[in-house]
Length: 197
Image 1 (cartoon, helix red, strand yellow):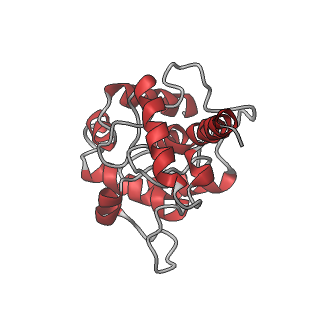
Image 2 (cartoon, rainbow, N blue to C red):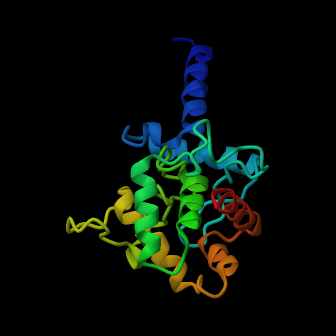
């Protein structure tokens, strides 16, 4: 295989990985290469976004305001599958935040589990938690005896707990900023939540 063909194959793989970094997460030795490639695309893009404990290096999906959370179905659930909507509502009922805020975070962070990472900063799961933050705030939301960052039944109540621990009941903007150190991210999540109300 010529060098040009190899370069084209690598470029194609990296392009797929940059669009959806989770695609190749189980392929040995590609993980580090993908993380580097995503970092380059993040640096070239907005450079903001991400969540679950103060990371700031993941691109902020739809921050330009052009994407619509309802998607094609217009169901008011940020395009969330029914199972996700139920989890957002259940977590909100046991916390200090509205389900619309949790759904907005789930939409902005992963499109409700469509892209669960790892992000360029190392965040994982549908609510994009950094590993250290997950160790502190992870929940066993479904009672199966495990705290799984990739399980929305665990990750969604963990996000609610994180926000409440950061004073979401009295200052939601500040709590969202703690979730992701970007005011642009805060504005985006609140705008999506408002469209769900």
